[in-house]
Length: 523
Image (cartoon, rainbow, N blue to C red; front, side, top):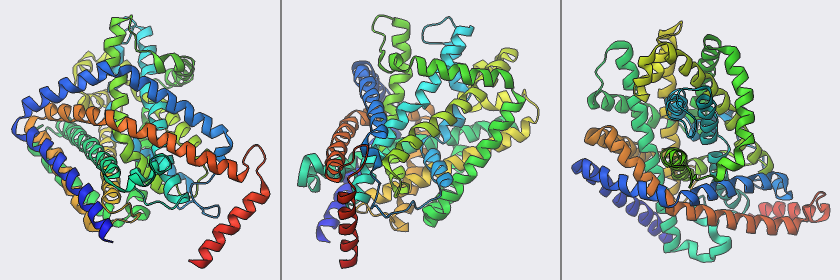
């Protein structure tokens, strides 16, 4: 117990110190903080662009390999474990945590942005629209979910099958041994906590900005940091209550509500928008995305200045951003995936969010472009109000906008309460059920950080923190690579022991299950 208290104190204290210093600097010196972090973030995307592209591509193909290999037969848990959540709830929970606000915030604005400034095509042309959809599918498709999946897979395997506590550092035991129980493990866990706090604080700020933008557009409510602070305060009460309720109640129910609201909004946009064009582009765009997947996964455009600059602003930035989110999303997905086979896990994590994203961005992006062509002022709107401007040109505009506001709030809550749960796990010895007061402390801290950044510089503060997330992502990417190697080493050894090939060694499997049952009986 004494050792656990020491470990808790180190992880919590160091995380709080690092985050506190950054927030203080952002609040007192917002311009200087933004300039320095922005310059460092730009240097990382320019210098390590090739590295991010390579790492994401290798992880994606490693996940595909696992899905078709005998390792895919292993279960994330004991052989007799059953999934804790129904499949539909499991899928909605992992999706809500993994994308959430980003789908609503960028649903129309990102395709429109690429349409106006495409990677290689001439702006505002058919070729630009094709590139816009392909690029958006790339950013929200297989790659981010492969990284989320490998972090979750390594943690779930280590925790539920090997009996480790739920800390990211423990997943590296196959290659680092007992060193994960000392300072090296603490550094890894602090980095995971830091990345989670940074990523979620930015998400909360973006959510508050878009809710404020919608209220301003619909009802003329002032668009300023005071209103955004009130929004954050109200939503904070809701997500802390949800986090206090636990996974089986708050987060699960809200995630299911998210999917219902998102489904209604999607169907409305699909019907009210250019339906046939959307369906045709889903088919054509998916083919274009898959056909160019390998090339665009590795292309850093060293000989094409226009695309190279576009990649720095979008794809490579996204890869760093998703990497910084991977500890948060990975830990949460691992927690809800006990009892699933590795093959089932990978197929679901890669395919389901990608398919949903393709349909979502096709409907919202193509509707947005078509509406904006007839109402050009939409092209000049900021991202937080652009979607409401598009709805204003469609039938049932008020209803659509109100559903959108509720959906953003629900995604806001699920992202935040998922984050408080993850932070509670990481600062409470990896427990699957962190104490309520720990989650409340982290919830209040997240909201305070988000509001201080909005107060200190609005979008400048958020951009500075986004750059900090990119900076945090670089060292954490090394941790992800080590996690991948450690997981494969441990899982492949177990595969050999069990004789898992095309046909498993039934005798070894029976011996293994009997030994597990004997251990449970003795305990």
